[in-house]
Image (cartoon, rainbow, N blue to C red; front, top):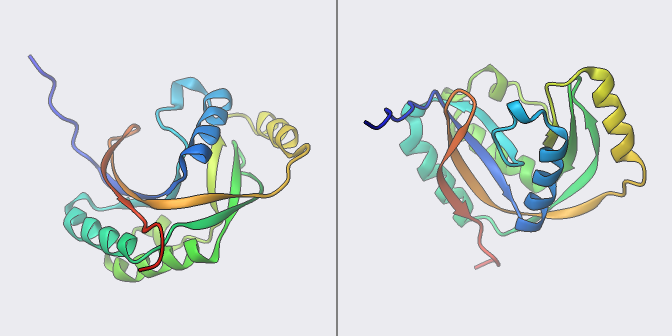
Length: 178
């Protein structure tokens, strides 16, 4: 007997990073994230909770946005304290403008967290720990840290399944301007 497929409770849209950066951040996440809570590889969340019933519009809009976007750099700018964890803060006007353009298309779909987003875009490598452990990791990672660039290579749409995520679609950016 097979188990019933889990029903998604939300759609999540992420900015896909290049494979080298994804492997590096996922390695840090596996090292520092509590294993009983780490169901995901490293990711850059653009939208946290869009309604699953809007999947057709979200997929269409992501496909259109990705087709009109060229691969671009993201600056890994600094460490960002989350209170119960640590993230790498990212800076990119291009990424913020892309998020803003999508948010204008989806105004009626946005919940409070997505509507009130203030940034920064980030990659979480630790969460759900005591703040003192997070401060220690932040200090450790800051030692010798120098800002660097990674590549933004596409958009991904995920089903949120109450903890784990399931990939619904990937939309790569163009490698060069048309």
